[in-house]
Image 1 (cartoon, rainbow, N blue to C red):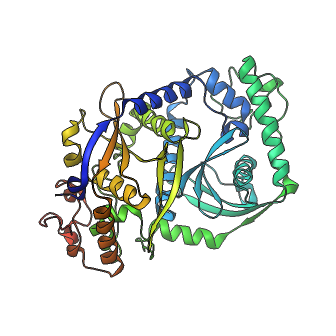
Image 2 (image 1 turned 90 degrees about the vertical axis):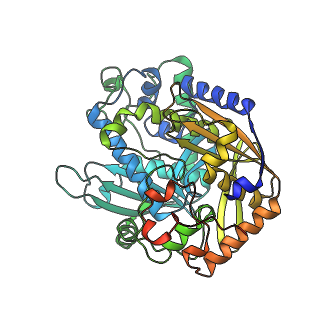
Image 3 (image 1 turned 180 degrees about the horizontal axis):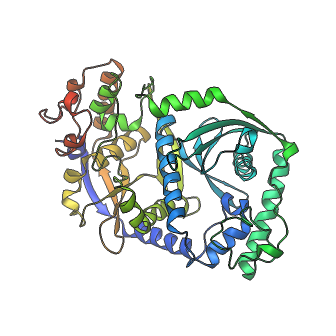
Amino acid sequence: MSLAQRVVSGIDANRTVKDELTAALKRQGRRRRISVTDLVNPRQAFHQRAHPEIQPDPERKQAMLAGTGFHEVFGRAVSTEEFVEQFVEFQGVVGKIDIYEEVPVELKTTASLPAGLGAARSSYIDQLGMYCTMTGRDAGRLFVYKRALYGRPGALRAFDVRFRDLRSIEREMVRRRDQFRDALTRNDPSALPRCEWFDLSCDFKAVCGCGTAAPLTRVVPASAVQIAENGELVDAMTALLTDAPKPGPQFRLNDLVFPRRAAVERQGVAEAKPEGEDQGEGERGGLDSALAGMERLGFGDALKDALWYGVPGAFARIPVSLRSLKGRVGTFRGVPTIFRSTRRPKLVERSQLVEEFPYYFDRIAFECALSGQNTGRVVIYYEAVKDDKFMVYDVYFRDLDAIQAEADRRLTLLEAGAAPDQLPPCEPSWMPSYCPHAARCACKVAAPTLG
C-alpha cells in the first residue's frame, strides 16, 4: 500500500478551477500577454499572432523540437525542477528564464556557431539583459549549443555576461512594450522595427513588410555589456551532460517519492530515465511521432502555462525544506498544486486515482506536509484522450503528522546511505519493469515498507 493510500481522506473534482484554466487557455489563444521574446523581435511576434495559419516548415519544426529537447536534457542535468523555467513578471512584461538559481541562465540552440564572442548573438544578449533587469541581477550566463547536423558534431559555448546599466534596459523594454501594445490594439505593425531575420529565412516574409521598416536597434547597447567566454564552465557542463550523475548532498522532493531510485543513483549507478509515466511529463516517442504530436503536446504546454501564468497573481512558488532536502512548492491560489500528464486512453475513475497514480499523490502529500496544508491539488492532462481532456482534483489528507514522519524517515535513511532495499520501492507495480536500476533495486520482489 502506498503512502497516499494510507493518508488520502478524499478527492473532489474541482470544476471551478478547471473552468478558470479553460478561460485562461481561451484568453491565451485570443491574445497572449506581452513577453520578453515578443520584445526581442516585435514585428515577428506581431505576425505570429496576426497570422496563426503560417506555420514553420518541417525542417524548422525539427530544429525547434531539437532545441526543446536540448533545453530539457540540459535543465535536468545541471539544475533541479525548482529552478528550471522560472516565471518572472516586470512592468507588464512576462518571461520564462531557462534556469534561475543565483543568476538568470539562458540556453540557446543554433545550426551554426560563429567564432569568438559572435556566438553570443545580440538577440541572445538582449533577452538575457531583460531577464537580468526583471530580476534585479547585473550578471547572467549564456549557453549556446550548435546542434549536431549532417555528421558534424555538436558544440557548446558558455559566456559570462555583465550589464552596466539596467535602468537603460528597463526604459527600452517599456518603450517596446508600449509600441508593441499599440500595434496590437490598432492591428497595424507599420511602426514596429524589422526583425533580425530580415533577408534571411523567415516564415512571415510574404506578409511582414520588413523591407520598409526601420532597422532593429539593440535593447542592450554594445557599450553597456561585458561578455567573457567561459571555457571552464563548458567543461563542467559537458561532464554533467555526459558522465554518470554524481548527486550532491542536497536531496529533492522527488527523492521522497522514489527513495529507492535516489539511493541507487547515489551509489554511482548510471542513470537513464525510465520508460512509462515517471514525473508526469509522459514519454515522447521517436522524432516522427513527436513531430506528428506537436499540436497535442502544444496543448499540454499551453495548459501548464495557463496554470502557472494564465491567471495573474494566482500562481506562486514557496520554499520548503527538511534538513538536507530543499525544494519549492508551486501553489495555485494558495493551494499546493502539481501538473501531471498521462497517455492513458481514457479518464481514470476518481475512486481509482490513488491506486493508478500513487506517485502523483505521494508527491502532493509530501508537498502539503512540508508546507503545512491539509489540501493539495493535482491537474491531470490525458494526452491520448480526444478533445484534450484534463481534470482538476482537490486532494484532502487526514494526517499531516504521519506524512511528515514518513518524509523524515525516508530522508533519514537516504542521508545515512541506507541500502536501497531498506527504502520503499517505486510504485505502481509496473514501474520497476521500465527502470534502468531494476537489476539493483529489487523493487519487483519487494513489498512496500512504510513506517
